Length: 168
Image (cartoon, rainbow, N blue to C red; front, side):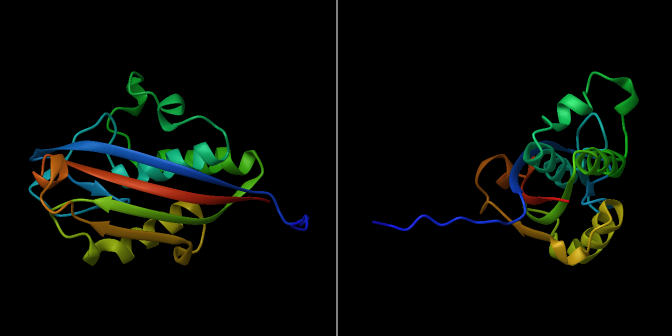
């Protein structure tokens, strides 16, 4: 018979986020809190920063605080064109008000072009500043879809994030 193990650790929770946005020519491309030079940008009610949106959703989900659309509905004109860093700051306020801190974030951006790797360190720096956590706690990876699907046809961008939060 397997022994029963009792753990007396801090309470931890995980969350997952997923988001997509269409790409349109001539729009600014906000990704990870920075403007990335490109001919196309993401279309959305806010600044359409897909990376920040998945991080927000993952954090809200981990804390059982619903999702980004619940807190910042695209039917509310006050969020039209809003800088997603402001949304992330509010999510962090909600998370901390519920007694949690971020353990770590692991995220992946799916995009054919532009190449994301040259911008990752700056994204980590900006996100860490907004969230008031160490940049080392924010992993950002990028991949293509090998020219498959809407990402492969350069019609859109997708992102995923998992987070670990810890009771403070």
